Image (cartoon, rainbow, N blue to C red; front, side, top):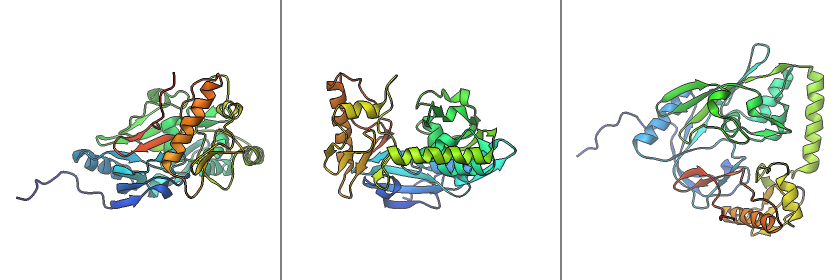
Length: 310
């Protein structure tokens, strides 16, 4: 007997058994059962609906600059944005339209070229605009909530446009659900002097080169900063700078970054994070909380599987 017809056809760009390490900046992790590439709002909705109809877990992966993929891969569908959903355009004097899959540093460059200021902090965040909105990413005492005008969220049920107040945006947190995708965003900026903006970006790039690891396999900050302190300082004080587990080590340049060798595994990275947290706590510091996310084989994107610390 033939299976009953389904309402949603398979996404046209569905690929099977895809290695995921190259989808992340730290370059570790296993294989996904499937990867779908969506190029429009309708494509995102259709991919999510197809997966929900079949009970297939979904994980949205952009540039992978804030993600550890399990060595066991992912028993579900990874969704990636492409085409128009990676584009950036200037709308009027102070608005930047960005697809959710657009590079945030590239959006910074586009805004600067158009004489718009307020997004310069994003130059140090090597992720996508959608990912940055979903976690309210920030740097240099600024966050996405400071510039977000609106966002388009897609789910298996359709799309909706929301504002910052709808997203409960606090430090590295929003109310974007695990089954929703930030497919586009409008950023509300200010008019500024292009030369002054370029000078500010050049200054921050110099600071980043001097204080963060360069030319290595890593991702963004490993732990969020506890109130009134910095995770990097706490890790360094606890003796973690340069500490290694397997092929992963806390950077000798900045202790709140992890560098991975070609032999590193996701298990090495997670074990190193656990050891760093333990040492900070044993040294009288607070319990550090992960800023990076983890792609679990069964549960999708969640927090890294770190042991509880009292």
